[in-house]
Image (cartoon, helix red, strand yellow):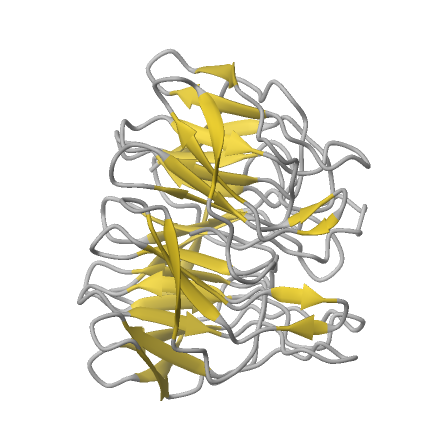
Length: 365
C-alpha cells in the first residue's frame, strides 16, 4: 500500500545539487505521459503487471479518471472512471487480478465508499462500504488475500484508531482489534511472517504532531501489539521491506506540519527483536516520499519535498553497508509514486503533492 500526503500546498519547485558518488549504470528515461495531469492520486501494480492509476486532484477538482500502463508498449490507456471521484484514498491490487479503491475525500466529504476495478471489463463497481469513513489511512493486502485498513483522518483535526478487514471473496467488511494509537499518514508494511507493521504518522488534535510509536498486527489472533518506538517521530515518510525481512523507514516530517521540519534520518525495524536500530541518513532531508526495493536488495527513494522545495534527486540505500549513495536524478522535480515493474525497472508516476503533472519516468537500476 502506498501513503498520500495531505501537505500538498507548497508550489516551489527545485532540487539540491549534492556532491556524492552517483550509483554506476543507473538512469532515468522518459516514459509515456499520463493522459490526465493529477496529484494526490493512487496507484498499484495489478496481478498481470500493468499499472493502474486513479483519482487525485487535477487542478481544484477531485477527479474520477483512471488509466492503465502497459510496460510492453510504453502506453497508457483510459479505463472506466471511478464511481466516486476521490483523493487521499488507497488502491490495492487483489490476488484475483482486480483492484480495490477505499475511502478518501470526495466532493461531498470523507468517504466510506469502496469500489472494485475489473481489468477484463475495464470498469469499476461499487462494493460494500467500510464501517468508518476515512482518508489518509493505510490499506495492506494480507497473506490470505484480505485487505486490512487502519487509522486515517475521520474529521477535521481528528484521526481514528479503528481497523477493519475486507474479504474480496464475500464482499464483507469486518471490524477488528483497534490500533493502540490513532494516526494518519503513517506507513503499513506486510512482514514476511504475515504480520503487519504500522509506524509513525500524525496524531489527532490541533497540532497534528508526528509520533514515533509503532505496533504490529497479528491477523491470526486479531491483536495489535505495541513494539519498540522509532528513534524519531515522523509522518509522510517512506517504508519498505528489505530482502532479509527487516523494514527500512526513512525521511518524513518530524514536527507539527505548521513547522514542517524535514529529516534525512533512517532506521530499520527488526521483526525478531520487535525494535529499531538507526542506520545511515539519506543524503538530503525529504518528505512525501515513496520507496521501492530493487533486484539487488537495495532501496530506491526518488524526489519528494526537501526542506523548502520539491526535488528531482534520487538515492539508493545499501543494506549491507547501511549507507546511501546518490543515483541519477529524474528530469522533473516532484514527489512521485513508485511502482516496480515486472522486469525490475521502477516507474515514477506524477506527484502526490505540490504540482499537477503528467510526468512519468522509468528507472533502470
